[in-house]
Length: 239
Image 1 (spheres, rainbow, N blue to C red):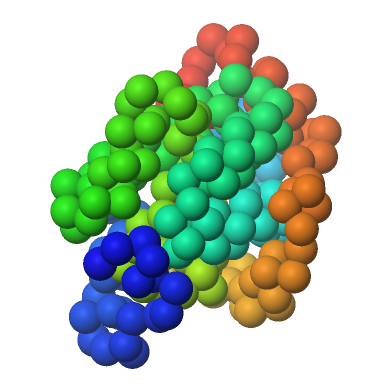
Image 2: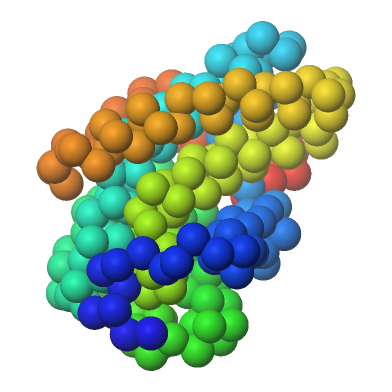
């Protein structure tokens, strides 16, 4: 399938559902298991101490992602569907510029590059190979939400599904890390995940109606925690 073909969604088939599950699966090898989404510092600094504060932290992260990377993902999906590499590079650079800490930049580009590499190999799509080559050449940072958008657009999978996969991934990363960092049960984290996905439709509609310039990266506490994590003597996660 060419990028031009991706403007129309693929038929609503079992194969389409399976591919959304495959590329949204937490075991898809992008290296996400090495990151905590800022939770490790939040626990060390006692911002997160129990189930209630964990849920509040994860909800904030999901909301921030929707208004930042989520908006970029929708715009990148449109650009990829149109086969516009120059526009994708422009979007990618703006995502990268909004990552204020070195750790959040590292997380986004490492996962994005690996996702682009794996996607190109698995699907064999020429446009994905083109995007991978631009990242490898250093022409663009290669942030994760852009790589995810390109993957879904090239396969004819809708932007809504790509957005939901991204949002789910943010929540799942934090809650998975919580199981390794604090006393919390699988029942607790799954209950939280269930609640955190309840507003996905409304979040998508907001992101889809936004301008690219509306991407918001203002999260002072998150940036402070990221800065503290860089100098932490004991670290299980990369951010």
